Image (tube, rainbow, N blue to C red):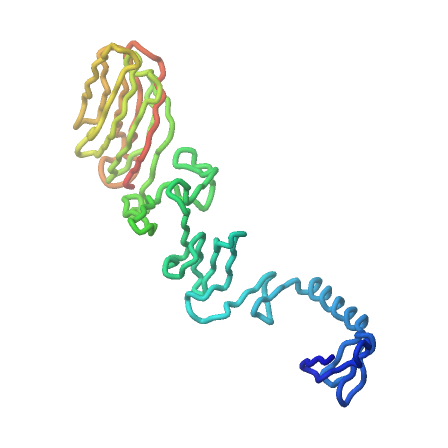
Length: 313
């Protein structure tokens, strides 16, 4: 029997367990490691050295390199190719179907193995229209503002998606004006006027309201989209209302174009928004307040929510 390896040409004598190298010594009982010089070493000594070196590398460096002889991280991978589409990392399931890809250009694909599809930094394919492509939990919101630092609840933009799945920001008044602010939240109106937001010169204010409980009128809910400026007063662009019973309780909106806006029901409780100008009317701050309250013969308190609010400065 013969064996050929990088260190020479070996043969044994029929069923003998001893191996011989042409021009060198034998390898008895196949217990040994052949150096490039042709000399032998005991396999036990070699394994002890290998184990020692392996443990030493784990203890002192703990870094593993793939296609990288000087890893600087716990796992340090260098792509084997130079094109953007070359894959540095590929993970497949048991099918096997490729489910995770990192390309040489840094683009990442989830259920998106083709370079032609992975044209963005992160490319996600849900695989089915019945499966959500992204799910986020425990998010902060513009009402509660639970994150104390690092998040601007006043300057932000809506994310929109084009027909090709690309995500981008929508140009918005809250994006362009660093002094803009919001006042989204849940409020409760009583007969005592309370401040919804402070006013300063140059303010343009817009907000939407909804009374989620049947507490206005005689059991009514109200939705409205409201704008206020010092020169134009209150403007209501859209509104709607309904009663919890079959009996209609008519409502009229009074005070449009003034600083006192009332959602006035024929019967029961009315909701009022009013502006109190107490400071310098014009450029500057501390111009006054925008307030809310109720009046009438119905409920003594009315909860309402404010959505999509902005104040231009």
